Amino acid sequence: DCEIADCGLMPRTFWMPVDETPACTLEKMALDVFRHHVTAAAELSGKSYDKATSGAEWWVQIRPSPPNMGRYAMHDKPDEMSESGISFHWDKDEDLRLLAGGNLYVHPHISTVTYL
Image (cartoon, rainbow, N blue to C red; front, side, top):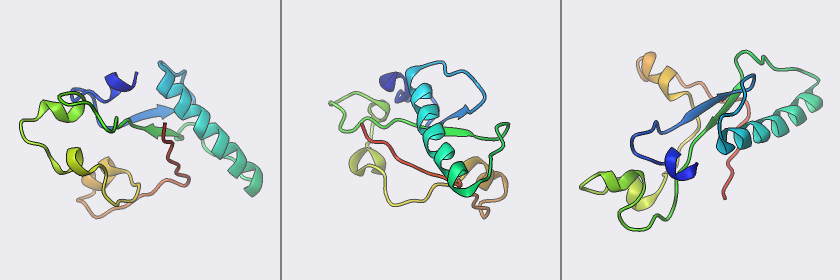
């Protein structure tokens, strides 16, 4: 699943709605992590969440990759990410930001990173 998700022909990120059935192991893991954290936050706050608009964004970056493999092997010239990994950033809805002209930053209520 990781090699397929990291293929240069696939999107960079994926969305797994909380009310849908996972189609692969990575989607199941994303929902498991989501449910673990959101359930704990809901119990602590006494609030619920909107299942119709909630879910988990997930993505894969295989590092380090063997030579000539993975998303970045498709390019003739290495780019910044292929050489240095992911630089400092904050989570935000990139599509919404671009649709709003580049100045709207909507952040997730809960964010976590899982390294395997």
